[in-house]
Image: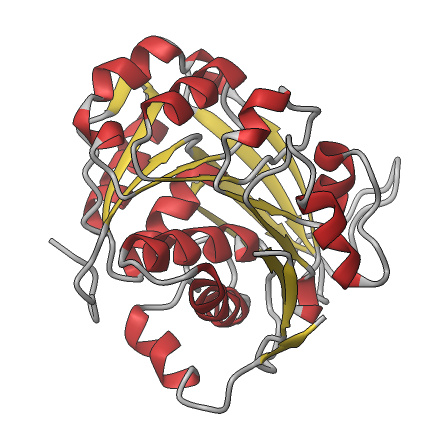
Length: 314
């Protein structure tokens, strides 16, 4: 089963985390020692890996999810939610203990603070990547994040025969060989500084200098929140601006971007075309509460892309 509005649909393997998100909405985010009453509450699937798999599936890709879930009710909820999107969950194995959780606080402006409890995600290993077999090695695009152990990410990169996309969140200093082997690095402003060792420059064109290093990824995509994204490829930096939307909850917008980017790359699109699509998808996703609830279908994104191009030299 492929998501509504699918194109030719390339194959995407997402290797990463799955959490049950517990989301509260308050007028403001709590200060230390402060107790607030929530105005809304919801529970649903989350985790950066699961979110990105949902997003890629809704954009028409044929998606496999490689991860670990606990032997609890939350694990079944997470697997069922992915399966409902048409995601292959055969590499989403069960392990002893609890599934991951994320405690998400959202304020009236749509900003969020998140605490993640790794649970089963912390057990993912290189052996699990090996067991996934062709789900990883046969994918057009393999996507990883850092909510699972680095050894699993490195194993996924080595098994990848297609395009390797790395979203290093939560950010950490990475082995030079992993960065050099990354085809597309997707980072926000904070992750950019931690992973690449230098602050995101005010003049975005200067990203090209970092990308020219021998140990840098082939392509660097810096997500900029309300400003869109800067894409550095072939020594050229392009700023892609988002459409104007009413933001309800920004949770999951970055994951929507990565999933949509992967889905487009899997069809053979170049990175600029894929990023333009991903910027629109991420923007549309902020219009509803929850990490996955607002993720758009391909048809919605294509309708917004019918307007003039949203990019310019940085």
